[in-house]
Image 1: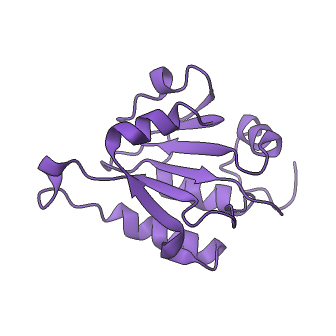
Image 2 (image 1 turned 135 degrees about the horizontal axis):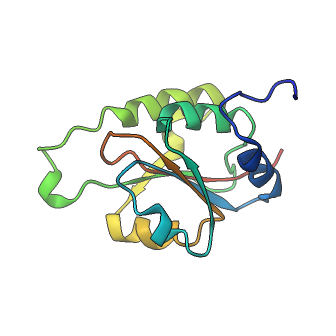
Length: 146
């Protein structure tokens, strides 16, 4: 046992977070995200019994966001056909979580188109596959320095 490590963080993820360096990215993926196919060149960690917000909060207790980029937390932008039809209240949860861990708060969040998100996810060091049922709940984080 270690002190100060959130209980939700499995040993494999703790090892990965330690291995990651400044500028490396990880993706916390919702249950619909194609984690296995996107993560062919990444470490894929399954955390099916958990949602993205609780994992995000736990990771940010250990993991500084990159201060050298404007938006180190990246969301998947709504597809045109979903704009005005799909709500994303989980994004406000993310903003509140980030604000607890980074002084930029919501300003640290940006978004990119779906297929650009997929391309960027393929470059991530790690993809965490969750059981999150909210749609558009994927988030990428870029690691900073301590």
